[in-house]
Length: 255
Ligand SMILES: [Zn+2]
Ligand SMILES: [Zn+2]
Image (cartoon, rainbow, N blue to C red):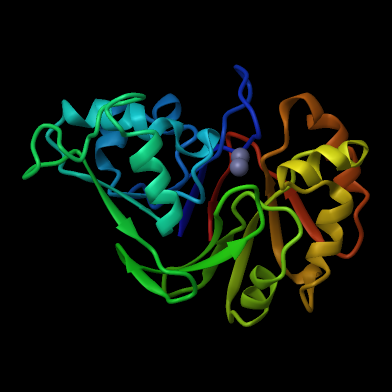
């Protein structure tokens, strides 16, 4: 699996991009930085975007990529996610008010986007991958994903604070290669992290130790708030018994 980081931050500046990961050029996880980081030919090559939840920093570029693709002869883009997330996108984003309903553009017969619901915990084929959805804890319905390409599994936490089921599913997964894991705020901002359903290094280390062997799992951190980037990195560097890497926009991995 070729995993490329397009966006890995909890906010945007010229040096920070909101969440988006590209797998083998055709599958994206979240849409925070699809059009800012991919040129038109790469946008046209995408087949499916799996969205973790409905928050704007994870869905925003669905709007701009749909608009671009409506002018390219590349077929519909599949937007996959849980029932609640897709319902929010239909009602609050592609609603002919905030943005056009690209399910009907240019026509119902040839839409620019199609939705695909992913059930919780039942492995579902998406392109060539088995995708398992794990419910996590955030302020809206939010999902983590276990993506199995047949050679191994790469997991994405989605936006979440302390949670349980994700760790149970990961412990039950053979050949787990890496976890892309959220952490957002420094320990001093615990109240804000709790209120907004995110992790600090203090809650992150407690959650990672719900795994039987957290030190064996390559854990790649994303969603740090730009204002707190150096504080969170320093605090994460002190965490013990884990195998952490803070993601950068230039990161690309063969997993
Ligand atoms: Zn969120
Ligand atoms: Zn977010």
